[in-house]
Image (tube, rainbow, N blue to C red; front, side, top):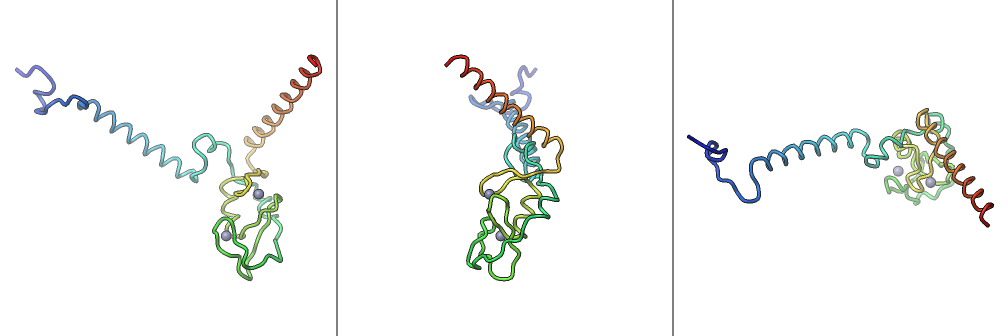
Length: 154
Ligand SMILES: [Zn+2]
Ligand SMILES: [Zn+2]
């Protein structure tokens, strides 16, 4: 009568990895590939915390970006690294960074910040706007606490 697992399954135990370890590794790999899939489906933005923080820029904001004119055609677009060339539409963000229209629009459909300086722009996402307001209120409170603290102890 077989008395242990290895006899029954006709394989030799090795000192560092039994069948249990292999199963565990298998599950770990599956889990990782799920996470990766999720990450890619969400536009490959920051991971994972930033995923929930980066909604697209507001449609109206994107549509109202001013056209940038008079750029030398040899200037390179920071997104695609191609020269602007002649006869293309170039858009300028309020932070004064500029890009091909065809490059910045898809970018802003993914996230609400400038690819160059990370300045954040309005979104259509109410939860996010609420979160952002809350964050700046928190900063304000922090500032007030510090000011109060300083006035009491200096
Ligand atoms: Zn471009
Ligand atoms: Zn910028």
